[in-house]
Image 1 (tube, rainbow, N blue to C red):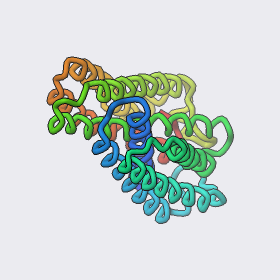
Image 2: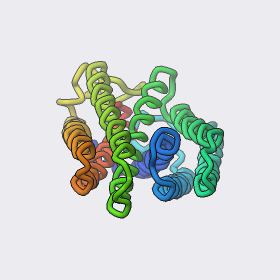
Image 3: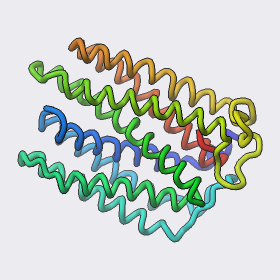
Image 4: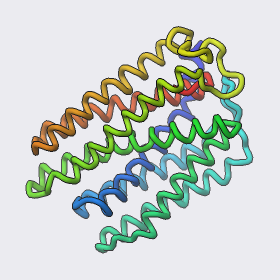
Length: 283
């Protein structure tokens, strides 16, 4: 039943992945523009990726089912239109920031505005699906970290490629992004332990996963262990390795490691979203 519940709610999982890619990429663009010496070419391309993923997320949102099938997660339709409007405005802000970057502007107001709109999308997602304030905070925290991890590792992989065509680019941009990625995955790992220890989930969650650490042994155990090993522990090791290779300017090795990390982090995001929308549990 657990795999069937996930399969029935793939549309919501797809929304989570696309939204995370869009918001995470944009956050890295802002960080790269304001805090590092990343090239305008990389920043512009990644901003274009953020806008594209955002547009796909908006299209995905407009096709979401009216209810989450066989799940305790209840959809509040009152937030559907505001959520879609926020997503559309985010896409426009990413395009505007792309234009500003190409013109050589730092465009701090546009950067801040885009980040606020991205946060608004996640807040409206929490209001749409997480119910009460406690679960809403859990959802918002998890989704925010997943977005930075998913979009961040994708942007880091693109940045690694930039070193292959821009040999004189200093290592600082990739080191900064890799350090951020490592920190976010550590935070997600700590969050996993907290969620597992408290049996965090929305009202009506699968009772087989709501007792302390029951998620690791109940009907959702396979997905929880996959999330922990494939989506957290493995990316944690690879992220540390990527950071060390970036520090020594072994950019080809760092890029290869980041390629691997894109797949493992994305898999972890899919698993976390699948367990939430399938069972109402946070992992």
